[in-house]
Length: 303
Image 1: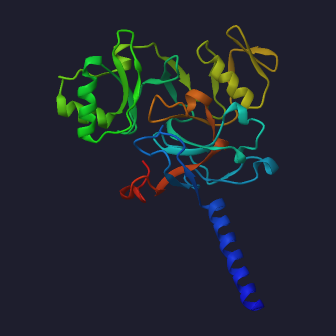
Image 2: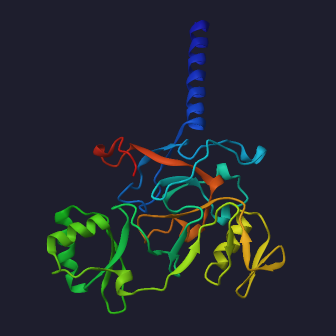
Image 3: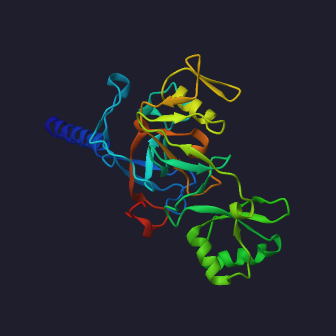
C-alpha cells in the first residue's frame, strides 16, 4: 500500500514538474478578457502563447534583470501577449502583472500617423477582422439590423451618434464588404474618419539607442514612457519635457518599444490607454485557440 502511494506521489510530482517546465519554457495560456480582438479572437476564448516567437524571456527579472534567449523583433500584424504596462502596475514585478493581448501595428523605429485620440488614421490594414467606425442614416437602422441578422453578423452594438443624428457602429473590413455586396450604395455607410477627417501627427515608436524629438503632441506619451519604463524622473511644464530636472528637446531611449491596437476602435485595452509596450513586457505570440467559443474554432491558428 505504501509503495503504491509512493508511486502515485512520484507520478503526480513528475506531471506537475513537466507542466511547470512546459509553461515556463515553451508555451503558456491566456483567456481573452474582452471583445476588443473580435473577430480574430472572441471574449472568453483560451489561446496558447508561443514563448519562443520573439525569444524566450527568462523568468525572475527582479533578481537578475531582463534577458531573452534568441531574441527577435515583433512583426507588424502579429497578435502579441504581454504583461500590463499600465501605470497602476508600476510597483508590481513585470512577470506578475495581468496579461494583455493585442495586435502590433508599430515596431521599434516605425513612425505612425495618429490623431489626437491616438488612433491610426493612415497606414496598412493588417487583418480583415480589424474594425472601423461607420456612419449611416438613422432611418436605415431597422433595415441594417435585418441585414445583419441575414448575414449572421453579431455583436455590433451601437457605438454612438453624430451631431446630425446619424448612427455609428463598428464593423470589420470583411463585414463592411459583405454589407456593401448585399445592398450596394442603397444603404449609405461611410467610415467615420472619412466623414469627419482629423489631423494626423507623426508618432515615432522608440527603438533602443534612437533619439526621439519632443513635440507638443507626443510630450505626454514620451514623459510617461520615460518615467514608467526608462525609470527616470520626468515631468512636463507647459509643452516642455523635463528629465531629471533639465529641459530636453530630444531623448535617447534604452530599449525597444511597440505600439499595439485592438481590432475594435471602441475597445480601449491597447496603446491608446497605456502607451508604448516595452520589449521586456513581451511574453510571446498568440498561437492556437484551445478553448473556443464555437467548436469549429478549436485549434485554429491565431492570425
